[in-house]
Length: 284
Image (cartoon, rainbow, N blue to C red; front, side, top):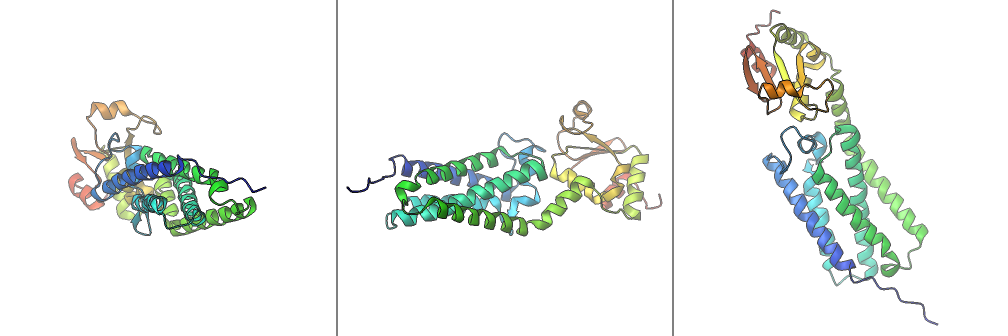
């Protein structure tokens, strides 16, 4: 009696093509935002989307993560269309690619939750797309590569997962330290940083910002440990000791915004610029 022949369902190819096409368009949009520094649709300044896009983790080996997404989805789309490959070769290539994308997406989601502490909706959608593609390929293995045992599939999967996780962490290792510095502001302040911070604090200067604003974190980092002398108003409702009503009353719409001597200055400024507008002469 001949063995029962397994065939991939009719939805297999159209599903991969549609999902990968959506992924390509989404990644192209995110790549455009990265290079133009344009605000994402439905994402206000200082929002989670902006925080993720402007974080150090938005690039990998100098390449925007979104651009890597374009490449990944494009290869999946092309491999799905190719008719010169055997079912086994096509499934193997697609499985390795989709699993790598799935693991990398999981790694990026971890960064959003626990390191950047901001969630990008577009990134979540991309992660969901890659997850669905991976599940489809895993589900259809019996039809496309029946001779590959479950044990060998597991070994292959574990190997790919370890390679993706450890290589990603190794490449972006330094960015974890930078993120911790921004969060804790533990760096030692020199005399100029301390003097300027105390002077601004004594003059009643105020910095308005959001804990999810990357430029606000960079501004804080310029002061190092001396930032504790600066009066800071958190405008995001979910931030620590938030006071969004005060921000609203003062018409604060962009972060950071400095209030110095009764005037408002939008955007992050260097310590030298802050010295000039505040009148600090270094003698405090």
